[in-house]
Image (cartoon, rainbow, N blue to C red; front, side, top):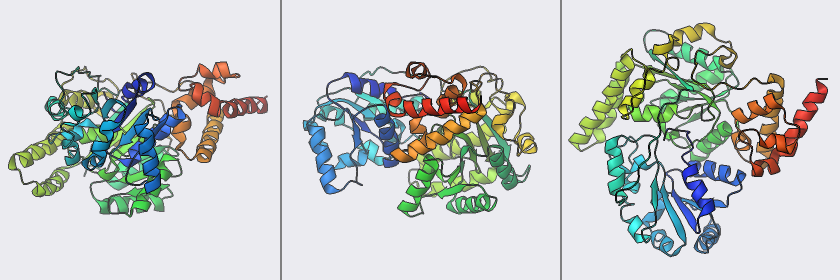
Length: 466
């Protein structure tokens, strides 16, 4: 299923219904934390067991796992390369979940050797069901996943990869001032969350410094920064203390923030899968979001330089073809969504309004409209879901309240409610718990935790307007 489509539901519901613990293998500690925060807000008993735990805490969590006290437990694949692999064989597990399963395939865009060593785990765990999830698997990668995980004639499910709420716009470098255009695009989303991807650490630092000099609340993120600095940047972004994160692909799968309104690629990504994965960070709440990519043949040549470390000539050739394939896709004047989906073996009609080719909206045209906030303009996107008609003043008050409650609980703001839910609350103005439960995104657990605060804020706003 596509990014942000709710794949996690396919193991959250079994975790609530089945006896035993659902074991989820996930590639990044930061991603685990995001998902566990979400699960906790929904009333699940979930945890992660990773290298950051103190010895006593790790031992306590392992004891609870053996006793079946957790509904879900997250592990990194690397954790199963030691004694823990033997330990879990004596734990009451109901389901093994391999998240970001494309990492298991050397033909995937984010291959990780630790995933490769999961072979045989299904048999070791007594043949329990295995669920593999990914948003970016070609047929070749899917076949590799099945083989590596020891699946025998598994049921396969594939949702449409079409994300109509993402407006894709490509811009060839050299046709304008890239840095000035990026600044204008950021300005057009003032006060909203966005990600800017750069190819190199140097470009990340230069772009961050430039944005900060213009008053943008931007933070840098790349693998060369100290661990604590990276963690601080990610937490600031997740909690809306920073509007823009400027990053290399090291930021990759480590974020699940639902209200990212724009993704800008300062440089061309390395392949179609990476591009799709990275723009998929935007608009996870279903609201309209913008995805800009700046590209050039020079970017292709820079990516090729990184291929020299690959010893296998066949794999090196495969990776180079993937780079050129994306450049060719961006050069063609055909529907962007249609071209991406065709790569994943899905055929759709031209999107009509969700890309620059179909809509006629260009990066330079949007720059001309800046600094008018993008969300205040009439969108061209007929198929993209629009925010419901809302009270903008109340929406701002609810957003401030959300931030205060999130800081109190030590979680990202979107864990409380996403933007779509806030917009619906601001439009419907519920006056009772029952009315609030009718709002999409409000469940029993969140009503119990946050309902009184939001109902009071809505009532207070209503009385002050009289």
